[in-house]
Image 1: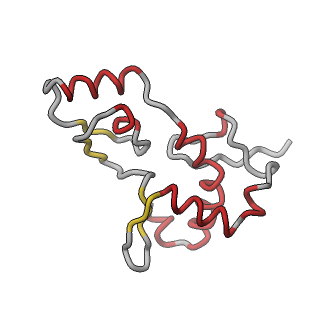
Image 2: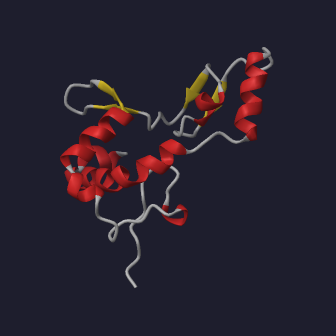
Image 3: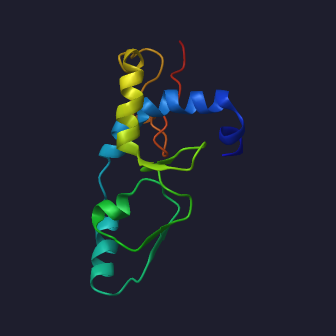
Length: 127
């Protein structure tokens, strides 16, 4: 986080990879445990869900009282003015501005083995 906030190069690297990694990250679906926790919440057996995950899968499963310790990847905050925007809206904006990058398939891979837990995409290793 400190590197991201203090280095324009790190931010460019993150967004160049995140623009590719976001679609499969966003399409991820809750597993049976997420669903079970949401059902326990709806039954009144769970008052809050505290998670380190940034994927929003608890909310997708139906949990409404979620505390995200490390924030979320579903909201983007402007470093200049602090305005919050939906990550999907931001994705559409950066994809439109960087349409040429979205067509590139050789530099970064979003195959499952290259997908990182935060929606970033690992750089493909050159052979």
